[in-house]
Length: 309
Ligand SMILES: Cc1cc2nc3c(=O)[nH]c(=O)nc-3n(C[C@H](O)[C@H](O)[C@H](O)COP(=O)(O)O)c2cc1C
Image (cartoon, rainbow, N blue to C red; front, side):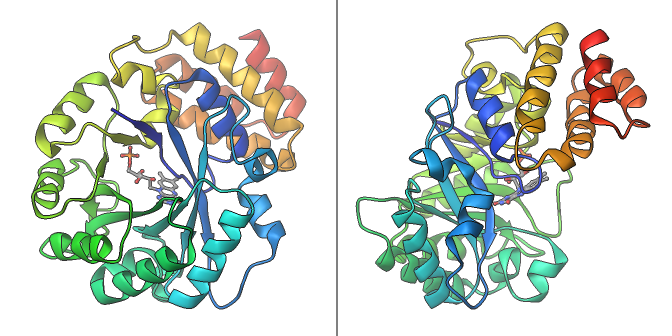
C-alpha cells in the first residue's frame, strides 16, 4: 500500500508539505500545479511552486516530490515536463481535474475530461519527452458533468504510456460534495492495467477501508483529510490513532516557525486561519482557536495566542 499526499494549490505549499511529511507515513508528494500555456516557463516558476527542487526534490525528511503540470498544449507540456525532470523532479504528474473556472475557460484542467483525444495527445507528448525511467502520472476526475466516459479517459491515458493514474472519484460538476463514487474506480480498474491510486473523501481508517473495498485499490491519495488529521497517513495504515489536540497544537506552532521564515511569510495569517478551518473538522478546540485568531492580522499576535492557548 502506498499513501500519497495530494496536490492542493494554495494550501499544501512547501512548508505544509515539509510539516506533514515530517509527521510521516507518506511515500510521495505531488506538488501544487504549474500552469503551462504557451511557453517554456522560466526556472524560477518551478522553484517558486516547488521549493524542494533545491533539495533533490525531497521534503526535509526525505519524501520525494513529483511536480504537477496543468495544460492543454502537447508540445508546451512536453517541454515543461522535461524541464521539471532536468531540475530534479521525481517524474511528472498531469492535472486533468482542476475545476477552477479560469483554468477551464482556457480549456485546461477538468475541461479536458470532455476531450479524451486531447488527454491522449498531452499525455503521449509528455511521456515521450520524459526519460523512460521517470514516472509520468495523471490525475483525473470521473468526468465533466457525467461519469459515462471515465473508462475511455483512463484508457486514453494508458495507451499514451502513462505509468500510473490517480482517480478523484467525482465529476467536475460534483466539485467537492460527498460522497466520492469509489465504485467507479473499480470499473476503471477492470478496464485498464494501469496502477490506480484512489482519491476522494478519505478522512479516517474506516473511510480508507471502505474506499479500498469499493475501488479495489490499496494505494490512496489523501487531500483535505491530511490537513484535518495531520497524522492521517499513519491512521489509514492502521498504525496510529488520530493525534491528540495538544499534539496538533504543537504542530501549529511548529508550522508557524516554518512559515514565518519562508518566502511566503506575508501569507502566514491567512494560511494559519485556513489550516485551522480544516483542523476544526476533527478537533472542536480548533474552532475556538479559529474564532480568536480570525480577527488578528499580526503574525506575532497570532503566534503568541497559539503558544498561550
Ligand atoms: C484547496 C485545494 C487545492 C487543490 N489543488 C489541486 C492541485 O493543484 N492539483 C490537483 O490535481 N488537485 C488539486 N486539488 C484536488 C485534491 O488533490 C484532491 O483530488 C481532492 O481534494 C479530493 O481529495 P480529498 O477528498 O481527499 O480532499 C485541490 C483540492 C483542494 C481542496
